[in-house]
Length: 378
Image (tube, rainbow, N blue to C red; front, side, top):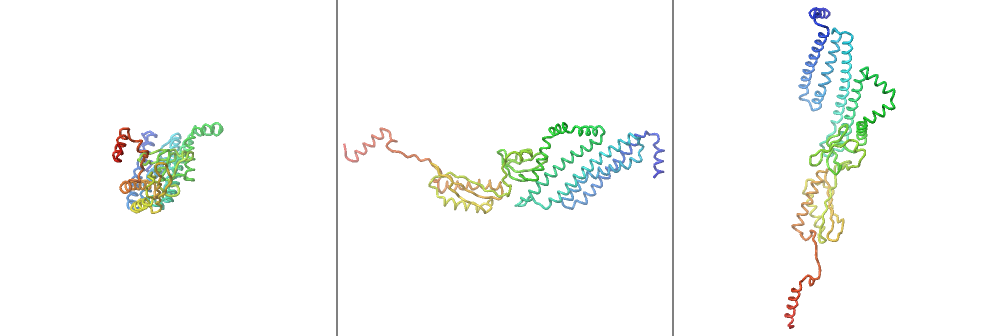
């Protein structure tokens, strides 16, 4: 090895040391990148026939593997490169920054792998997915919060490797009172959402795929990030809501304890409507519908008014979309049934009064003349 280095020094003695060092580092970085690319392709082929977890694991390890090979190669070549003290200090500083980045990536990858293994036992596509949604929501929120904290700590650690920033940090710590207030005010929105995310993960007022009524809009929770929640509205629009909203303002969660819901249908009918016939027809409708969960199908007279009565129909379904569709189906079929079989049961406006007052003077005279002729009076 020493003979090889001596021969190389003799061949390239005419080149400046800084150019030789740059060339050596460029060669080892290219070699490390080339090696990591082929290793990743090899691992990808080995995992091609495995399940999704292993393929995702190989993909996640691509960047940490490449960065670790580059750092190790640069660290080894630093011992043989002709560097002066300043150049050696710059290289050591860059390698230190690379190690900090690699450590953050390693922790981030380890968290993701652990959560993936943990969540493999839960299936969101099952019929009763309440427990799965609870664990998936909690895990994803904590993962994003941990990622945000890793980024903040990593950037802070990198900045502290610079002497000027380190001295500034000491000065800030020395005057922590005023500086803490300024930094707290500047980072209030970020810190507010981070702590709201932690509280949301623990208390879980919402979960992934929950059905919510918020700001007058109905939708489902599509994604929960470290700072905001994406609500998929029923007409495919997306509502972006900050995490702190769910800690400060009221909203409706239709799937908090379970996905099953009771849907109501209100009918306003005439007093002559036969309620037993409506109950029998409702039973036929729900038994023929795949949307009904075979739990509740009730007909109730809830209000008496001057011109009509209020009939409330209660039906249940396995989730909110099915409940909405079932309500529309019951409403439509019952109205059609009443129109065809009992049209008089639909609301009507009755007008009653003295018939003689509704006739004009000429009509009254003709009516009286007709009555006199019929009785033989002149």
